[in-house]
Amino acid sequence: MSPSVSINTQSPILQAHVSRNEPHIVIDGGYPLTGSIRVAGSKNAALALIAGTLLATSGKTVLHNLPNITDIADLVAILNSMGAVAQFSDGNTTLTVDASGTRFNEPPPHLVSRMRGSLQLLGPLLARQGIVRLAMPGGCNIGARAVDLHEKGLRGLGATWTIDSGCFFAEAPFDGLQGGAVYLDKPSVGATMNTMMAASLASGVTTIENAAQEPDVVDLANLIVAMGGIVDGQGTSRITVTGVKVLHGCEFNVSPDRIEAGTYAIAAVATGGDITLIGADFNALSPVLSKLTDMGAHVATDGNHVRVWSGSVQTLTGTSIVASPHPGFPTDLQQPFTSLLALVHGTNTVHDSVYEGRFGHIPCLSKMGANIKVEGSVTIVSGVTSLSGADVKATDLRAGAALVVAGLVASGQTRIFDIHHIERGYQDLCVRLRQLGAHCWRVNVGDMDTMVME
Ligand code: EPZ
Image 1 (cartoon, rainbow, N blue to C red):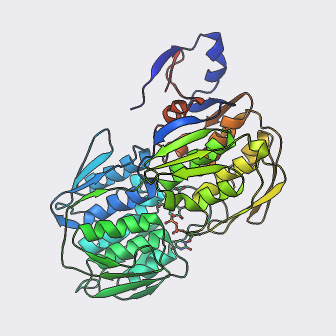
Image 2 (cartoon, protein in one colour; image 1 turned 90 degrees about the vertical axis):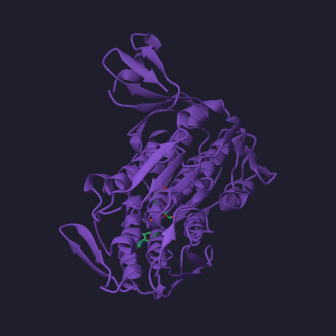
Image 3 (cartoon, rainbow, N blue to C red; image 1 turned 90 degrees about the horizontal axis):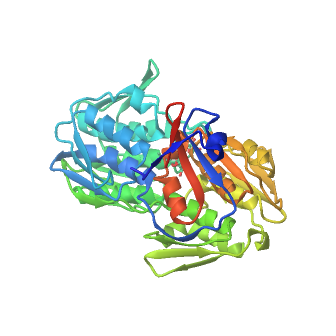
């Protein structure tokens, strides 16, 4: 838990903060980020790895370096409801899972609907139980987010697939899943992961062509190998999985979160700061770091840390980005990057080729004084000399991150509401930002007279 203090809301300085009775983030902008923080484990890798623990029929799987965020807690609750025994330790950053007793095949819909990551239960439950019924997953509202490629991957292994009363229903053939050739029309991260997990316990060899190359996919493949499975080609567009009869528990470290690290790097450059990201993976971050250096920011690494620093945002050169599958610029950072571009001289564009509707941050950035237009799937950003603080709402996880970056650099005070989106993906955000010198608090409004600033 974050350190917290109770505060008397009758204090005149704080009166302004309690006009809305819901948790929110308050940022007094204008302080450069300086200092160092340790990068948390990758949210998107961790969600798949936790689902992947269900593949082990014997032994315990211990995952280290998990981020302490709400999506992880929700997925672990699902595991426990399926008959597995999953327990956190080390401040919720280590998880020990004994999946040997997994016996149900229908995860609770109210938990499934909280996140997209629950879709990753399809592959392992189908492989283990031969049948799975999954309610519609939730997650950020950023585009169509189809599931046809998950269906294609599982059908490629012989499964049947139907949609029944709003649930996905997949069933393996009587004699079990059979390896096969799967071509993914798009390099979907989730479909690659589900196909890999199902194939790991199928008989024979599965090839996945046009597979996603994201580091999160590599983490999952390496987990399957550590459990006794056979996976080759992870990190390339052609993955081969040779099915084995059983998988066992193992110990595994989740890779650092390149999206969390990238968000802090962008915020450091936007505020003219100088930060060191301890444990960041330089190679995984290079699509965003190379854009930051193109703009005139500085980046250095000694292999274990990544340092990012820059002068005033006004001295940076503009750049345009096209978000695309790895190793392209990550879609999950295009929204925070847009907040940086909002202050850079000239007109630049942001095109998201992965999601057609990832624009929830734009109206709020405009409210803060940004000059941004959306044309089709392209955001056109004309730099302004300053942003000003305002009351804004996070419409999705990375839209929230974009508003945090904007708030850090804006003059005056920004209050961000609907922060449950942000808390799905960023561990102790305000605590970490304060560690870097930001003036930023999570305000938890309790009863009428007290609130807690964390
Ligand atoms: C994962 O989503 C991440 N989520 C996303 O992170 C991330 O943006 C995305 O990968 C891309 O990197 C999790 O890991 C939980 P996709 P996923 O399948 O797997 C289309 C964040 O902010 N598609 O690679 O759902 C889809 O519509 C989030 O942390 C199909 O057409 O992404 C999208 O346009 C948000 N049919 C594209 O492919 C399908 O069956 C990429 O989606 C599946 C996907």
